[in-house]
Length: 322
Image (cartoon, rainbow, N blue to C red):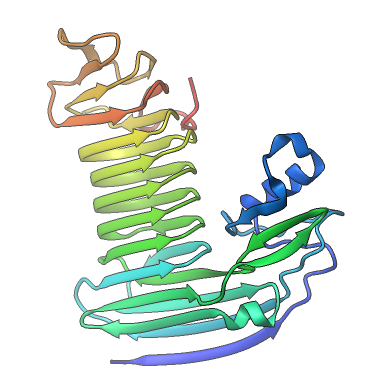
């Protein structure tokens, strides 16, 4: 096993007005300016960043000014299993042709006490690599404008490079998940935040409670869930497809020669070039459509959202396009 380990501590003062969190903190700032927009903001819980963001504003008195970086690399063979678990923060996975996994972690905290509560580990186990972050301290109470907020005061951004052929499992308590070029079994879950998958093939499962799920240029089996109203964008050649939203739209782009059946529980279907045939068993509540000569059943659960059907190569629309 080949392993290189580098730890560099860098203390960075981001400025008097700076916040390294979007999502909860951005909303908290708005609630401080407009108290009617939130309930019980005096005891709100700040769960951390949904994306890599540094905001500025006169009512933000807290600064994330402690940063520590760690890097490790591992030599692997075959199709490695890569497991990544991040307590809070973004995870970005890209690929290359080398039989090697590199891990770059940026630990960011509100002060040295919070930084000391971050635990980072990366280790080779069997034929794969496991990366894990944990936070070992209780929530802190900080002042944001005129509001007292509950927060960990810390998060970790992970950037990981793996071989093209790899099996991947990624979880984050709160943050963007981005994966590009991975061929294999991919399982992605973030409690809050968008998921972005590009240029892969194999079997993909993606889940978020809220945040746009975008899966583009993927070939294989997909099971995608977005439980809020941000929606799902799907583009590729799918052997099997399941998609579920909590009420948000779905945009589905397929090749011209596709043969498939679609079952969607929505009345709102917009066709932008696929020209499906309505099946006799279709109802107002459940639309059943055939593409080409028919084939695998694509089950889309939209719960009152709009389904947009597009031809690959046309103008790419957001999930909300109608």
